[in-house]
Amino acid sequence: MTPPPGAPSRLPRLVSVDVLRGLTVAAMVLVNNPGSWTSVYWPLRHAEWNGFTPTDMIFPFFLFIVGVAIPLALGPRLEQRSDGLVGRVLGRSLAIFALGLLLHALPWFHLATLRIPGVLQRIAVCYLLAAVLVLVSGGVAGWRLQAAVAGGLLVGYWLLMTRVAPPGGVAGDLSPAGNLAGYVDRLVLGPHLWQVSKFYDPEGVLSTLPAMATTLLGVLAGHWIRGAGPTRRAVGGLVSGGVAATAAGWLWAQSFPINKALWTSSYALFMSGLAALTLAACYWMIEVRGWRRVTGPFVVLGVTALPLFFLSSLMARLLLLIRVGPDRVRLHAWLFEHLFAPWASPFNASLAFALAYVLLWWGLMWALHRSGLRLRV
Image (cartoon, rainbow, N blue to C red; front, side, top):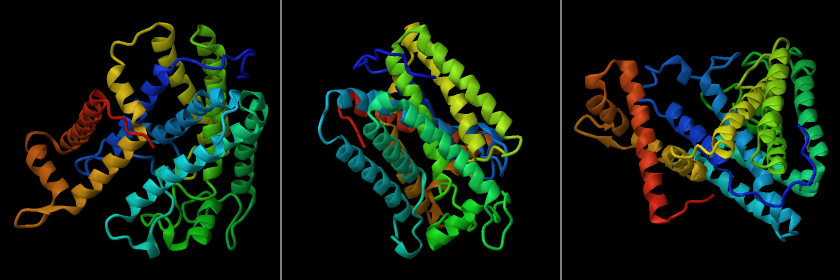
């Protein structure tokens, strides 16, 4: 997709982008908060290693949308030669990164083993690097450089993972313990990586390179949308680019498997294609056809996506820390056992808990929205 000439300096806020962001963050909250981790339907679990489930689509979709929003938010300011844009981007990135660290540190602040990577941390880094590249390359005028960087990151990561052997290992070993990205995580992060695995971090150092490419592919889609405006041409470009990326990612997966934990290049490309196709569907229904009657709930979630993710994750942590009753049961387990488990099968009760948690946070965000209070990060 190449941006059409004559891109307008400003578009009205795109409801379709907010809707897709809202759907994505709602899915994040849903899969992260089951009633019981022993009773979760397979679509709400990550793939064990290679391959993917619907849950593995959520994070790359969010990073793609982060990329889409960069030209929409920064493009007009760049064209108006606004001052301090890099400083604003840096400040926002640091705030998001700090919130991610705070989630990992609470409540005991064991700094010696504090996990440094994380979901919010990866969002912060990818946003920072992609936004700065857009700013220094001149916005839409630098789309070729931005596309070249995205391609270079995907190809470079593929070459590293398949041609470079970690010390004592074998080149091309993509197992949890033997892959190069895991070795880099252990070398750089030491005790500060994901303790569940101990071999690698799913938001680790090396795998952030293709995650940044995912964000940059979203940037290219954002340039296209901004140039084409709310027309069928914008939808056509998203569909064409989405089909091409999905097909290319699937073909690449025959030699470099789709793997969320490693964020393989095939995974980044395949998921970016699916994200573009999903955005095209939302864009056609909302911006072109004008179907906006049922978008309100998703817009509310979309405009508060990062605060919602942080606050919902914080509350989930508190539900595990607070203990109630004479047996000192975790509040999360008490709520599940008393409010959900008695009337449904384990899997359905676990799903009902997660859905109720999403609805609770939608209600809170809606109340804040109606009150005029806006949460921003």
